[in-house]
Image (cartoon, rainbow, N blue to C red; front, side, top):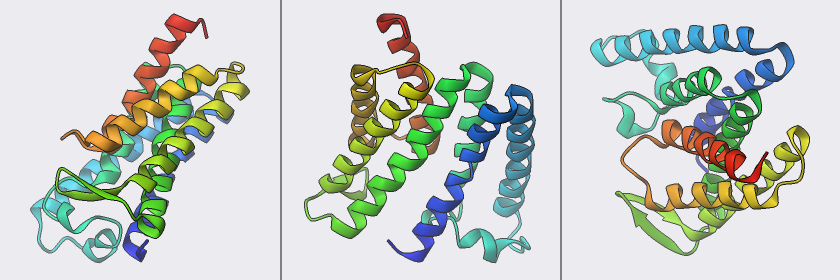
Amino acid sequence: MNIRNLRRKIFHMLALIFAVIYLGAGWLPAAILSISTLVLFAIVEVWRLRDPNFPLNIMVSRIIKPDEKNRVAAYFYFVLASTILIFLFPAYIMIISVLVAAIADAAAATVGYELGRHHYEARGNLKSFEGLIAGGVAAFLITLGAMFYFKGFFPLTSLIVASVFVALDYFTPPINDNLLNPISVAVTLTLCSLFFTI
């Protein structure tokens, strides 16, 4: 994985701070921090996209993809998704969704870049089946472990969440995955809680 992508993944991991604060300090501190961060990032993105002389261009360019130069960057969508999750879902669902979206995506990208040998194209992006499998395994293990911590042993729910993650990663819908993946995982967990009495 090149340095730019590594920086991006590490930066996305910062969203895990919201989950940690939600777990340790409760809803209100997590909500305040997420909204504050969202507003700050919105200001940065509007300023960056409108002003060619944006003073933080060098710093921001190190954590965004080249094709994000003229559009809203991924980090904004991840914070937006985290904020939506905090307001609409229970704590355990928010935390698991952010963990899966951040860590499983990083696992897929890292394994795909380092070990990927069998490639396929998804909406103009070259991906690998090795990365896809790694992301699915990570999503399963994260969900299984976190569900066990919060609610109990739910392997079927974990498998369903992993399957949703793999499907989204494979088909790559046009919606930014940093927004789509966390919310999709949260909706999946909510539906599973209705069917499996979590």
